[in-house]
Image 1 (tube, rainbow, N blue to C red):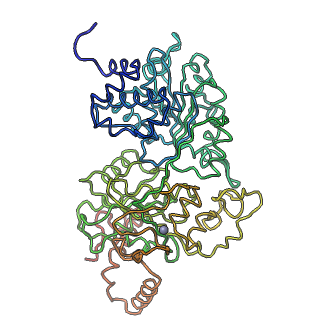
Image 2: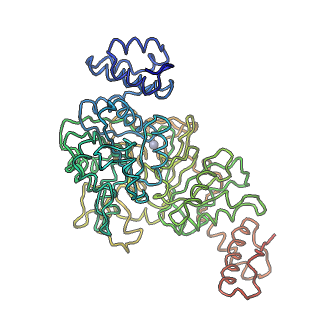
Image 3: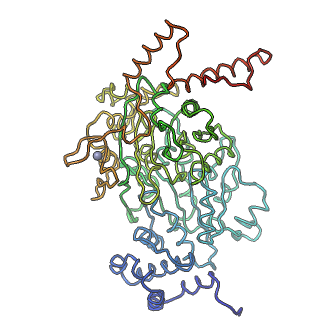
Length: 593
Ligand SMILES: [Zn+2]
């Protein structure tokens, strides 16, 4: 036997075999930093065999992370479900630590069994950071499998499954995008598709976890006459039918409204004997508001309120602006940049956009500039596809431009704000005037499921416009005078917990609606860094334009110069592009100053 202190692997081996009494004595040896932080009343309410599992899980975590971390009740309940070979459904907020139960379940497995754990995760962009979490924090060798994974058989043999010897490869945890489990649209068979149909491989699978499981409905199901965005999501039951029944499934999401929960239970959780874990996703430190924009979302002056006026970099809050239209992300960010003082260094970095047309390098640098305490980016204008689930720890204001397509989107996007401990954030929906004009009585079109709160009025075509797409729940939320927190948490998510309506932030505010209790007056302007563009401003600017037309040589009001410069320079660039030999030079942008 090798001498020297035991390795983490040896520690885990000892813990997996220790008796209840041994585990208890180990915990008391470590002392109050572990003992007192365990959810004791929960653990003590369990039969001894379950207590043993909880103590073991806590000690495994302690040994792996080198101390300091103790599992919470939600995590212990998920682990117990797995140990009892029950399916587990966890609805809990993003910050609740979903990685932990999956990691501890893997660490509690006896390595001699050579089990394989599969985790389906929706976003390719996030897989790499999830892999690092599993490997660096828990020492679990994890393979990322998506459409860019090499098809090279040597890699697969070494890392995932050794076909000749019929044994698992080096990495026992596979982080997979759902599409890899099915034949591709082009008729290719991804390597994982073949493995799932290989009985030797299938027998080694011990558990399957599904992250962001609401995607089964929101991405996988054809809805309202439109094809599914990612049909593979709705085909997970096929995977369930392929692999042994004994495999444990666990499902995670922060947003499971009743209509999606019903679909999940019908398709993926046939046994009534599953562990159902719910923790409120109410974000106490968020303040909610809606704001009606002037004219439409294309009127860029609606966004000027996001730039601090006068501009001071250190005082400018970090703002995340969600836009469902890729072109508009570019236009909004260019416009906001044009409002910055000219001559400011690193101007182009202060407002950045984040969408699928940008290169991976650009996206990474935008993320870095936005999240790094020394970074310059203060405003990130993003499409949701690019950034849902991406960690932006320091956001003080989240704005959704237009009506969010679903309540799930609204909650997920708003939830990007105030993620730093002790921080708070505003979530504001900037909607267009038409949202107030829609008749809610019209939401009963033919062939539309009336139990779906996100339904449009009638079936949609790909060419349907924003007004046609306006979903019931969010339109009603905008029109209603009812508390927004109540509408999102109780009416939409059916959260009946005591904490679903509580709030706590430095403003002492819940949302911009009236409440029965005493509260400070809500003033959106005081929560935004710049001035809101109003109908009155629009009238004034029209009058000023008319005046300028009359007296040609008159100067523009200084406040508008930034935007004018931007328009003129855009024209200069376009002219140069159309005819590079013209006298208009691209290298000398025009300035009014
Ligand atoms: Zn409220």
